[in-house]
Image (cartoon, rainbow, N blue to C red; front, side):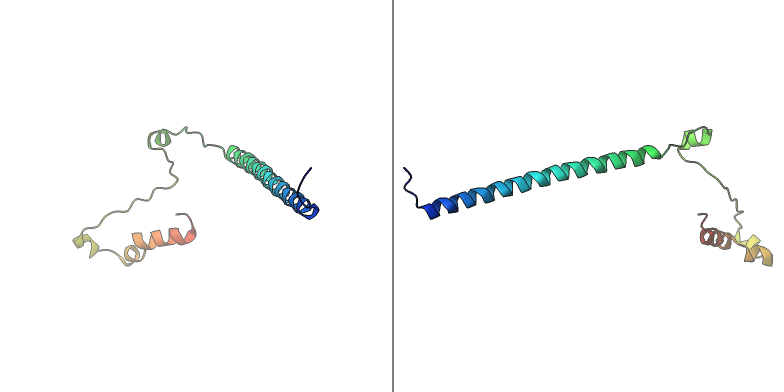
Length: 107
């Protein structure tokens, strides 16, 4: 026979039940975390698969690894030539054109 008092047995059963509840809660959290992790992996995989790679048909792209759309060529003036620039050339300088391109969102 058990020498424990009835109240002590009840308390022990309550403590044991609390331990089971804690274990079940931890187990449920682990299951939910694993399910969320799997969902995120599937979502990320689908998003990555949706992004298609650009085919590298251009020789420039194959050689350098990037493409180009526009080319701007500016003459570099020496000091003597800069003094002979017209008002139009001074107004539409390289700095002005680049600032306009940036403001337009192309660069």
